Amino acid sequence: MGVGVISEIAKRLHCTHLHPGYGFLSELPSLAAALSQISICFVGPTVETLRIASDKMLSRLASSLGTRWWRGTGIRTVADESAVADAYKRCLRESPSQRLFVEKALIGPSWKHIEVQIVGDGSGAVTHLWERECSVQRRFQKIIAPSRLPQDMVQPLLHASLRLAQSLKYKGLGTFEFLLDTHTREWFFLEINPRVQVEHTVTEEVMGIDLVRVQLLLSLPGSTLSSVQLPAVPHPPMGAAIQLRITADEPPGFQLSTGVIQARDITWPSGPGIRIDTWLLGLPSFLVGAEFDSLLAKIIVRGRDFEESTQRAKRALSELAIRGEVKTNHSRTIMPLQDISTTPQPSNSPAGVLMRPGTAFHLTLSPKGSTSASKHILTLDSIGRNAFPNELSGTLQTTLSPTPLDFHITQSTSALMSASSFELADRNNPSHIASPLTGKVVELHPALLAAGEAIIVFSIMKMETVVTAPGDGIKLGLWWEGVLICIYSPS
Image (cartoon, rainbow, N blue to C red; front, side, top):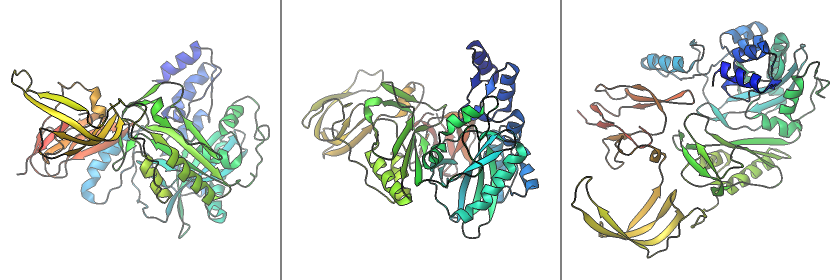
């Protein structure tokens, strides 16, 4: 949806304010400028601040304020010279400004991703609401966001953030991000996010402040930090909070999992100190597609200290269940919280079709267009899990095999495609290279390829995934998840 369309809709509906959320629109100077021309207030920083903050090159003004710089969006880590050209091409395609810069990669367990929550009223008066640590990430998206660091280690980052925000006469909410080496205490400035962040809930829980309310109040004429009851020196955080992002990404590769989630297949955690922010509410089913962010829910837990918060997070994840065809990062989100056994799934889901051990099926197989057929019988020996048609597992006996077989059926997201248009990869054939995800194809190499070269490039939420050749001798075949991309024929 473009700036012109959004502006026209806001004007037609007689809007006085427009809140852009935390998506791509929230950092568009052109949207703020277009709204100002039709007397609609953009809830966020000024056009000039957005122009600086949304452009990584312009944000280098931070250097003149005594801060240090590192990072940009569209990130690729390059380990050797041979990978430079490909990384350059990928990053350029992901860069809104079509400009890139190269810097030393800071990698290692001592480096932490720290962000400082800043609030300003546009007059030069600014304050901070402490920091969040967001070091556990998936594809540069934060998964776990605890708030726990020694304050003397964070103090230089707080001062740098306030100094930069004052120079910009920052208005509204903003997050100033850094990399911090916890061993040497060396730090580097990353970027300004001139909007409310997905993980703002961590700050809300430990500060007792509704940040979106503050953001809206500061958009009103004459509002100041004092009028929204924010002191220049904030009170210390109360307890500790952790945010867990539940996303439609299937481990271990965290590829996007698309499909339909039934409301009846969701079990949310509850209890003291547990908050759920999600869009999976109010409807019988929800479609997860490839065009939007994979975030399904945020689970925010709060406790008197980090240990209590961690225990509540473990319990919340053990109670959470999202069943069906859409796979999530649920199991991998548990792992950084020191491993916890998930709640066993019921053998018969409410979504399931009644099937009992002993149920027999007649199976007729024939080539397409042929009149000849072979007939078989399948008998269910046991049912492990029944959430059919989304999932079915157990053991069976069949005239196709002399011995009983364990089986596990899950409905693939590729069921949305036309079966006659694509050829599915044979998962048992090592020469078949299958599409690992559902996404938009932005690059395809039809020629014979050498080992390690890109075969196909998918784009999901403006981030690219590359499938490479396992060896020399690739023949292009017929992509959705599980679709045959090519056949590997060793030379």
